[in-house]
Image: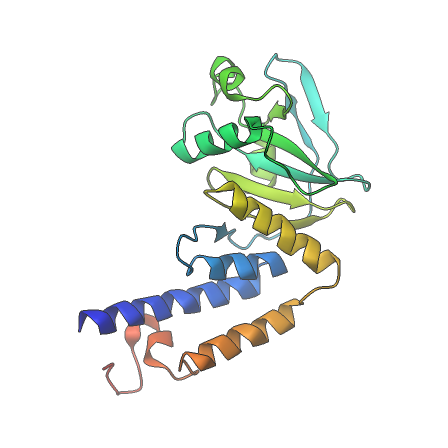
Length: 225
């Protein structure tokens, strides 16, 4: 019985991921499915009302005004929304300080924290690698509807938002960037990905009338086994 409940729970989670993927960008569909893989912790962003990218304006850790024009075509940017307090963020601060950490060619990194009213510039200076641009901007967190940290936004070389979501490891961030670049290069589109998901569900014996796909397990009078 325990095994049945576990399977039904996993199937329900899969449905939630599938529906969420239809509301997100192409990259987010794959990243939602990644949650079901062993060790997968990347989580797609909730649906937003606008998918426009925004320039980032704020101050440096030294208190100087800073403006990052990510919406100008020419180069891609990864915005990493981090804090000085969360344990998961600490891993990314360390990763960005590691000279072996490499982003895809042509992608620049900008770490965005909240204003000094929420963060300690002293603590951030201890964490921030000297080679990484860090801007304190609570406004940017609002512009991008950042729900929690760590959170990552990819703005492509056309100045358009092409992918976003949370992650717990740097390799998951690289996966987000790879998916976004694949979409730009004419890779698998959202329709094809949706069909692939349907085929994977069918192969697992999950059809449109499967009991696990009904809210709260409610069916048409037939009980779950």
